[in-house]
Length: 354
Image (cartoon, rainbow, N blue to C red):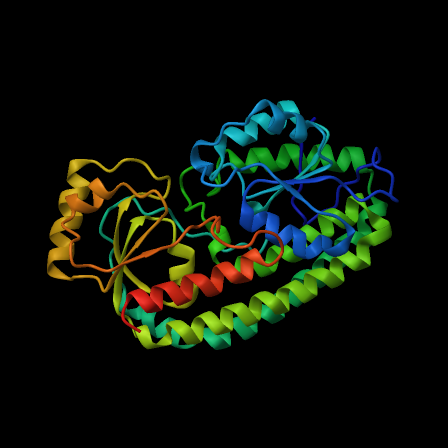
């Protein structure tokens, strides 16, 4: 039976010898990067999504399906980002330990925005003035998060693994029939929050420790080092973006909400929604009218953005910056995630005239 790991409790993987480094499959480049940080020199994770492919419409090739069937651990964002993958995990990787990052405790989820124009709450800007204090508190929460994992790990042997996993699996899916994790309610681009990524390093370390206890302390130490690396990248990005001072932006694809939130950016609206669906005439008309009133300083686009859509909102004269949420134009591996955060900040600041 497919096992979904929520790290408030541990799961055992008895078929995997403790001396072996698990074979790890990830869904997208940023998750591969976080996992590579935690694995360090012990091993290298594989990635399912090819460069340039959309996670929203991911379809596995036969070779990818075979690789997935051999996985010991699957680390992915979750069904909101790749709904097709959820079913494929059931059939192709039923014995693998699954870690859906968006469902882990401590993950900050934002609701999916369903309009082309976004309401702008000026009070939110005041909240972001205290963001450094928030980061400090969040770091302390991260340490508590690690302590909580240690507590559950210590208690893990007191439980019957099979009964516990089965009960948790059933409870988890009962909850998800009714709670806010239902597909489509949340923006799935959760990895673009450095705060989320920092929390996940601990989750990844504990998942790997479950399957490879001999190297558990190495995974945990690597996670702590990775958290420091991400914190440094976020601090640099925040300094780079500070001169924007609320200068408004617009986006072609509503993929950057978590980055906006973490760094206090003002975004007026998006051409296509979070799932990259083709916008309808009403959405485009509302966006065109709104941007005519409040012109953005920069329009954020992705590689392959349909220029015809840009024409529909009369975007001529608005400078553009190309941001790839997957970081496919950056060096891959452990260095990708911090580079992604820095690169986003640099390109946005340059585009907006700073």
